[in-house]
Length: 456
Image (cartoon, rainbow, N blue to C red; front, side, top):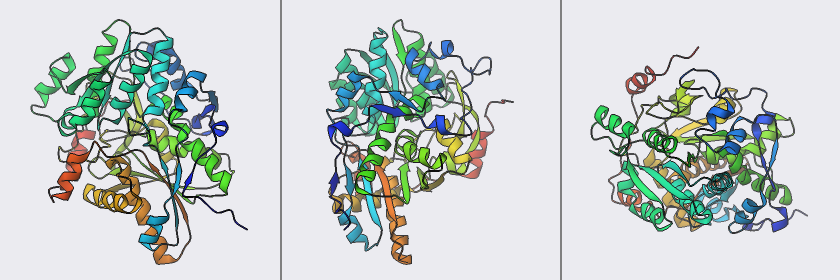
């Protein structure tokens, strides 16, 4: 007799991961190396250590160790809010009338309201271990800045956050949570850095982008004694830390005999998506199982579906290392009307390589359709989802409706990265009928891509 699946599946404390999983170790085609922006040669450990904590730089370059121990102090912190539940969406299945089985991994059960805390606490730990005074970072929608401010408060570190200006203005409550935890929050681009002033001169009145904010944060980090820069997505080290999402999901699935056919994640820089799919992707790469992976991105910032796979700067100010990734160009700035998050111009080099190798799919969705799905999910499942997460919800619902049409009983797993309680301005616009969709033209994307650096 089949084991009954509960609404929420929690692992026991003894079943929590004690190691992160590094999917690059199992990849036949490794992600291309980061390049020094001055020499265009692969960045060395010493060079990366001038920007990042040294142990994090080591993790960034590690392509051989499949498993890396999670320090006990980080494991202890994780236990304050992990394990995160794997939820069977029985109510959503019923409402859709689908034979599909739908599961979601919910990462919103912490004060930051998102999965970002999984890497924030790790990066703060290594900064403290190195004896640093503080860290700098950027944040878009605010989840990462919130998570990092919490982690820095825990370890007694100073935290300087450059927040994309449009989000700074639209999401004041996230800003205030950061300040409550002791962070200094600056709207980006700003007049406080040389790069910020240059961007403002070149793009007067700009509402900012993650690329702009990264440039400012890096400038302050490298110019301030005892500080390093930390990033909430894109980097290999971040996907490594976020693998706890996929490891817990896989353990819960194995415990109850659940075999996902389709695994779906929202895709901005790649942290949630990479973390969720990595252990499952590892099984696929080793020939142990097969899954269909779908990355979902906004139609207004479609790096995977309309970008170019090439070396590009990770930031608008062009001071960071170059990464080979699917990109829209480091100068690409999403429209100010885009409220759904996932605003980064490029995609994780690891995710990009997996996509380029044909191991996963990508789909772009318009934000009105995303918020329609978010509203329906909130009313049916009782959780107000983050706009970013709702991209995955949209496609999970679409795939479940396809099963309704075909009669196939597929099992769908998606990542619910966090809650949307600080995103009410966006929900207000949707509820008032004031939300619109903007899709960049081919000409706009081509103009941005024309400025890509020339790398042999």
